[in-house]
Image (cartoon, rainbow, N blue to C red; front, side):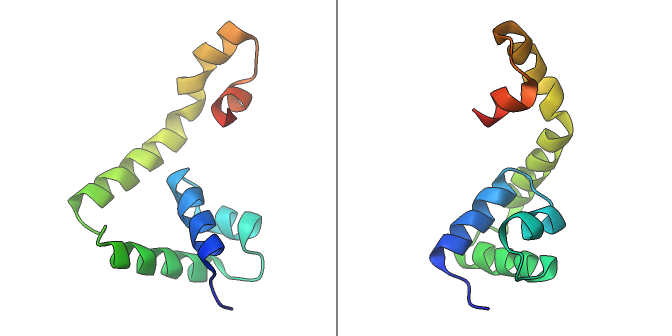
Length: 90
């Protein structure tokens, strides 16, 4: 199907949060495939001229964040008496 501007914003936002393709597809684009989402993202990045050294660095940072996010937010969450994922979402 056709991608809308709202779809593009959702796609870019989900990837910025580090969502994996299959999870992103299930959560936001059930009528599309994970591969279609990945290809659309790549096209959007090419249009923006983002596929350079900095984009690769940002992708690595996003992946590392996803592996460390519980550790990052747990201390603050404990101080305010909330669960870490609630604090992260805020």
